[in-house]
Image (cartoon, rainbow, N blue to C red):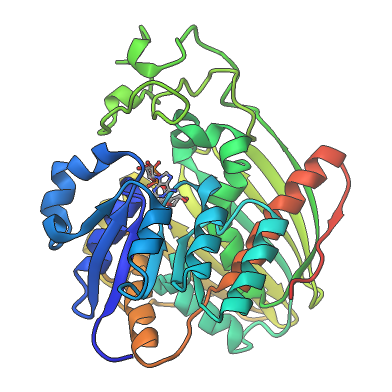
Length: 409
Ligand SMILES: NC(=O)c1ccc[n+]([C@@H]2O[C@H](COP(=O)([O-])OP(=O)(O)OC[C@H]3O[C@@H](n4cnc5c(N)ncnc54)[C@H](O)[C@@H]3O)[C@@H](O)[C@H]2O)c1
């Protein structure tokens, strides 16, 4: 491809605005259009100051109309609308001749994932899934270690997501399965994608248990919305104390009471996943944990390798001041049989932006690949694998039985 890569962004909410700014400021990208059914999002002062050439970006309140009118003028669309809209938007974009970068999760069911894989193959267009943690420096390093054979053939994994900010999902529409399929899909899918990346095989079976054990219990006499609640200034989860502009009341607003019993997603999940290469693995997601931390431990024929990425807010300063992050926030350890544990230093800078530099590094890799006619992962097949694991986990919880995952194309 010659010249700049022409982008449009769907969704001008939190993530869409962030991505419009991030991609818009890349020297080889032109951000030309945005769409959002809520025209108020376009009036945001923050967007005006943050997003490059925001005034001249063409704005649409209907994404389908944007696809129609921008044909031939845009190369890639970046889907940052809510999860439950992804399937429809991705398919429409592909059929209209666009390549797609979609935010995670790619979609909410195996059938929808299969549709996306099929249409991508039929149209010959690319799909890239925004699991930017694959590009985070600690993850790149850890993958390098696993691929080098340092622990031999991987046989076993145990991975834990401790999510101190799990309450934020209960403040929002993610609290209902009809919009999110649950927090495994909305949050866990980041780590599940990484697990698939590390194991490097197809998931074949999932057995899951989960429940709603902390949030949603109607423990307080709180009203349905934080803004109306007598405890809004003291509740540790109150949206009113957070730096958000509250949307109009309704299902899609951001201040539902986290303890309101009208939620139907789990906050406490355990999955056992079997892979086609024989790896057996457990994944735990705890949405009421005191820390904000991801842990990946793999045991192979020669030893164990562990990656711990701690984002607990109290460690933020150490992260910022410790350029190579070999300190407290990241730890990578390799233990070989009959040898002492070895701490592995992170020999690459983390870089700016969110997600341990992953957002920025993924953008740079994607643009480089597009300009040189190459492809990057995670693609629609990877998106299908993580979606399939969560979808099967939901079925397994319902049936209290293991669920087999059929192979994708
Ligand atoms: N990769 C990450 O780390 C990361 C981080 C945050 C959010 N996300 C993902 O980004 C997506 C958006 O999350 P958010 O927090 O910004 O949500 P949000 O609710 O704040 O914003 C979504 C916006 O999309 C708009 N919208 C709804 N339907 C649309 C459509 N058909 N076309 C265009 N716009 C539409 C809404 O009006 C809203 O303004 C979700 O899929 C979420 O999982 C990813």
